[in-house]
Length: 282
Image (cartoon, rainbow, N blue to C red; front, side, top):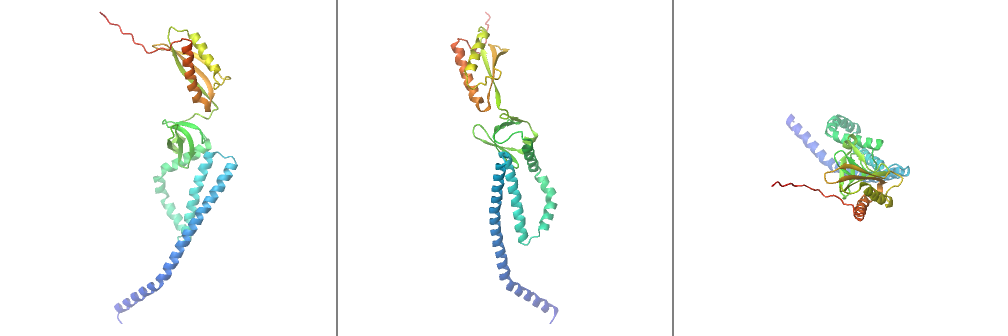
């Protein structure tokens, strides 16, 4: 028997052996895939159970809703990642190899998701420094404003007064200017009012002060001031300043504006209109 015939015989024997072992290997592989799927489903239920117990414990400890939502999101991603690693290791993939691959790819991934990492760090800062919490009405440096609905790992969700959802990156919020309108219990109301030059300023002040004293939304313990702010082109610009509770700010301001107009009308105090004097030479 020459060398060529020997090689053909070895290849034929290897192929026959492979065909004989194929059903058994396919069965074991299919069984392992099925078991991995079952393990994944069971793992999902365990993740949900752990998250439920964690959220329950945090709320029982009176942790803020924003912090609870942030921690829950972080734990969810961490447990999902751990579950996938465990199933891959059970399927025969070396966990050390996975970690080595992740380590070697960490630099490229870090460059690709540096914005997300910045948002994550910003979310941590927002929870630690607490410039706002869920339920506060805020405005950022770009003019986006609304009520804070939730603080996730990477983004903060705001709900605007007209019921729109604004999603803001945590990194931008943490590094920018934030105006919190609801942190303080009370808020100042400023209402500009114009009166004609020929009207008595002292009488107008008395009329407006009576409106402030009669309104239930005005905090009587705080300053209530009616003062001349400037002399305009068509009349005297008066500013009305008082205080109201945060939750009653807008309703009180709108009501005062309307009642001041009615009170000035009853007192026959005129509100000026823009006037232009035109002189025609003959």
